[in-house]
Image 1 (tube, rainbow, N blue to C red):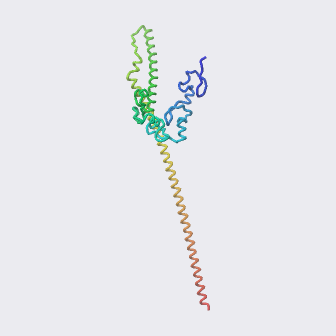
Image 2 (image 1 turned 45 degrees about the vertical axis):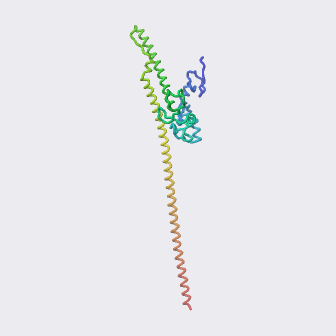
Image 3 (image 1 turned 60 degrees about the horizontal axis):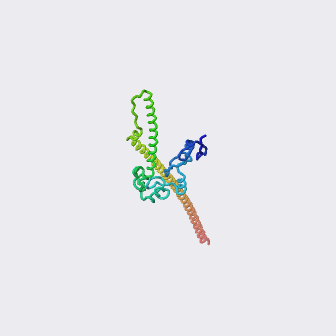
Length: 278
C-alpha cells in the first residue's frame, strides 16, 4: 500500500501526488483556501475566507496604524508609516536610492550590484520581477506541454509511416519550433497581459480610494448642512423669543404708565377739592 501524507490544513491523509508542492494542501483545501495577492502589499498568502482580502501582517498594521497610503516609490498601497512601504524603505537602506524600472518605468527598482540577482540582466522592480518570473514559468510549462504533445504526435506519425509501408515523412525538432521568434512574441504578449492586469487592479484600488474620499466628503457636507440648519433654527427661535419678551415688557410698561398717569390725575383732583372746600 502506498504511503499517505497529511494535508497541512485539514490533516486528512492523501497520496503525495495529490498534495500541492508548496503548501502540501489537498485539492479541496486548495479550492477553499486559494493563494491570492494581498490587496495592500501585493504579496501572495493563503486566503482563510472569501471576505479576507489582506494578509495577516497588513491586518495587524491596519489595526496599529490605520489604512495605508500609496508608496511614493512603487505606488503600492502599503505605506503604513510615512510615505514609503516597508519593502522600499528596507531596500533603500540596503541598496541606496531607487532607479527607473526597465519594465514599468517607475522609480522603484533597487540596484543590488549583482548581475546574478537580476532577471535576464534587467533591472526590474519587485512587482515586475514577480510578473516576469510568472511569465517565464508559464512559458516553460507551456513549452513542456507543447514538447510532450509534439513528441506524442511525432511518435504517432512514425508508427503510421511504419504501418503504412514507409511513406515519406520528415520529422521536425520541437525544440527548434519552440525557439522560433513566435515564442518570444508569446512571452511578450503574456507579460503585457500581466502588466495590464496589474494596472487594472491598481486603477480599481485608486477608484475605490476616490469613492471612499468622495463618500466621506459627502457625509461631511451633509453633517455641515445639518449643523447649519440646526443653528439657524436655534437663532430664529431665540430671535422670536426675544421679540415676544420685548413686546410683553413694552405692553407692561405702557400699562404701568397708564396706571401712573391715573394715580397722578387722581391726586391732583384730590388736592384741588381740598383747596376749594373751606
